[in-house]
Amino acid sequence: MRSLEFNQFLPITAEEAWDFFSTPANLSKITPKEMNFVITSKLPEKIYPGLIITYRVSPVLGIPMTWVTEITQVNNPFFFVDEQREGPYAIWHHEHHFKVVENGVIMTDKLFYKVPLGPIGHLIDTMFVHKKINGIFEFRKKFLEKNDTLLPR
Image (cartoon, rainbow, N blue to C red; front, side, top):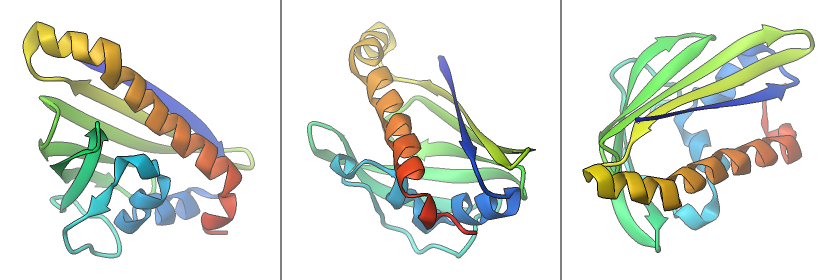
């Protein structure tokens, strides 16, 4: 299983960060367009424990697939966790943390994932998946830096 961690300073309050990132509809704003990411389930305004969200996404070669996640833990405004229930990974556990610091918040994503198919999956991960995931989080970081006006003030 892989574990990754991504950190980003945001010049906003924890409550403002929470307002943006706990709104499921905002996920499509911070996902690269080439992923063809579309939320297919009806969404509430804010996440809650037990919330199931379904998506269509094309992570590889433009091939669409269904991805289902569940919000398993919520501690407003400090963290929430989403876990895959159906999709491309054998394991997907994604923690979103918000820590108050001077003049803003440090947002930390902790991701634990495993690609299926044993040794073949490990090879696919090493060659493609790991780079793709890093690229998605880099896209999000750059997007938030360039578009920080989308974040609540």
